[in-house]
View (cartoon, rainbow, N blue to C red):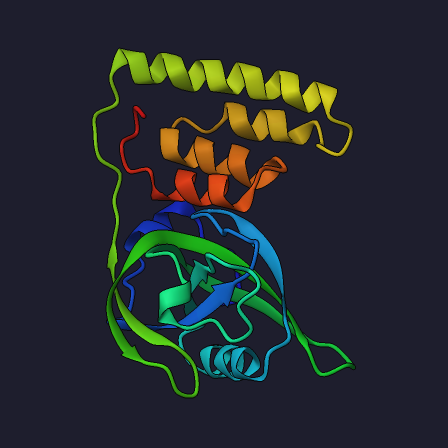
Length: 199
């Protein structure tokens, strides 16, 4: 499973009953996004090595307080993202660099274990609401405004405007915008948790 997953493959992918949990500090990974991550804690390195030897799927859940040394269940938000590990590189200092692709939004349903790393059961969190003409108009407005932001912000490539113009699904568009802009972690987490496509 090292090749990128298309939208069709993501929809067809069945998540296992249990997923290892990788706590993320000051990072929110969204469904359908590609994100590089640095892995340094021993238990997180073990988690990634085990996942790469298995189905390559993990639960990425953001830590509420980034100061937490060894984040446990109570330190995590309830909603995260199931993700596929595409690449893993060992760095000479003993840490890992990985590239993950967000697959689905998930919610912690049951805490299965915490040794050698967190393991949990999750439920998928689908979007709610209908795509009304108002929602379609909102999508077009966001696409237009995001295009203006891209033109004004030097670190954003022009290709993002084309990518945003080709995204019709409201949640996917919000994930693209949120993963691109430099906004606070708790604001990104709030966007991940929104289920109403018209909100």
